[in-house]
Every structure is written in structure tokens, then in C-alpha cells.
Image (tube, rainbow, N blue to C red; front, side):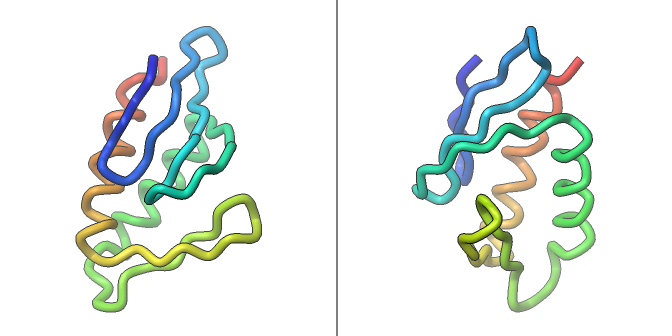
Length: 87
């Protein structure tokens, strides 16, 4: 199932029960996220969603990407959609 959110897009593989992240803020990447990894990211962003300076996440262990408070809110919404697909 293809998911195109506000901040992220990718494809959920129901058989493997994992999400292939293909784009973050219009940057093309290739990363597979298992349910536990998604939950850790989600809870981290929930905890820091009100930080005035936003957050910086690292893509593919090398690309820093700044997220504003609004982008964190949108990212959390996207992650909730992905989370609902795991079984």
C-alpha cells in the first residue's frame, strides 16, 4: 500500500509488516522501518513536539534534516497513518 503523507511517503508491505520510507520533506531516501522503530521515533517526536527550535533528525545515518514545530506535527500525523497499517 502506497502512503503519501504531508512529510513522508513510502510503501507499506503487508506481508513483511514493514514500511519502506522513500521520501522525507521531498528528499529521496530508501529506508525500511519496522513497527518498533516507528514507535520509538513517534514517541521521541511526541516528547519534543513543543520544542521551540524544532528537531533535527538524521536520515540514512548521514543527512541531518531540520523539522519545525509544524513539520513535527505533520510528521506525527503521517506516522499515525503508518502505525495503523502494522498488524
